[in-house]
Amino acid sequence: MATTLTLRVYDVAGRVVRTLVDGTMRAGRDLGVVWNGTDDAGAPVASGIYLCRLDAPGLRASRKLVLLR
Image (cartoon, rainbow, N blue to C red; front, side, top):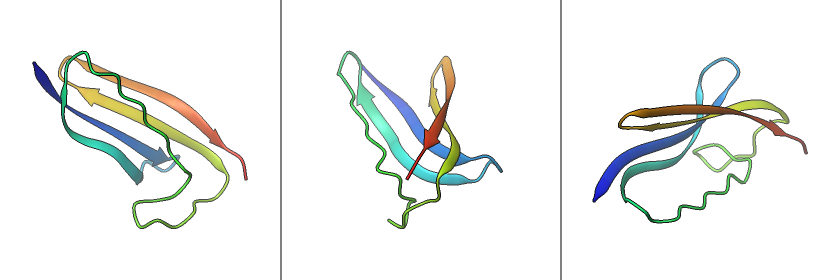
C-alpha cells in the first residue's frame, strides 16, 4: 500500500524554504530525512526558527526547528 506525502520546511513568514519529500511512499517503510540547512536552490539559509510540516492523507503535523550556525 502506498500513500502520497509532502514534507516541507517553511520560514516564519510562511514561505517554503525546502521541499524534502513530495511523492508517493510505501506504507511501513522507514523514512529518514535530513535537512542540511539549505533552500531548494542549494543556498545556505540563515540561522533562525523554521517550521517543518508533514502532509499525508488523514494527517497534518508540524514541528518547530531551530537552525544554529
